[in-house]
Image (tube, rainbow, N blue to C red; front, side, top):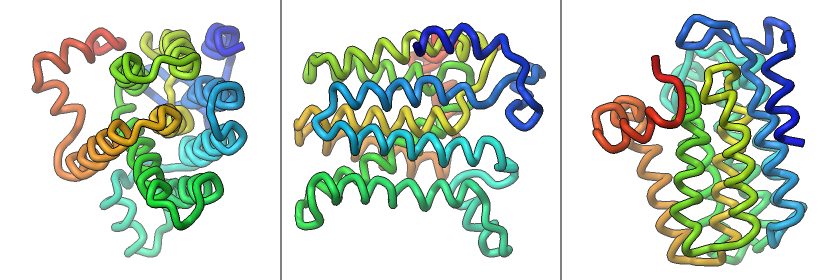
Length: 250
């Protein structure tokens, strides 16, 4: 089904509200991220230990991302930017997204693991930080999905199950039109993918892996408040080469 929508969606005529002009001057659909997001949500139903909760969490992230894609202005960016807007009396869709993310993560963690389990707080941090990192990466075609695939491939030797293999397959299929700059993932896809990657890590039940991934995700969030992740990627020979393989760059 994901493969079918991957072929069909770029060929449809979308209303202006659901389109954006990309870096190459072409107006393209900005809501394609619904496809990998909903495919990953469905995958959780069949492969995640907390199947229904995990599925609903990805759907929730997808919906708040869709809200930002269709009604967000893009004037204010980053945590600092949305807080600046709030001080001016402006409540941005980006701020709603930033506040809703940890709330939804907390609901998932507390329902699944309880309020008195320290893992709940680790997973809340992991999910919220992971979703924002992949959103920050989603500034070039294929980048968010590409780095998600690389992350899951790195985890694969530790956690080799149908869940992670299914996630990799979904991303490998749906990255194609995004990499070719025919569609945009949008926040609906990027933050849902970040959430899904975190849920795969959680499903591994590997505490060392969970703590390591959470620290890395938090570090990248803090780093992004001072530096552009895109520039850091471009300035690193290895990351730049990998990034170039993920999608169109010129």
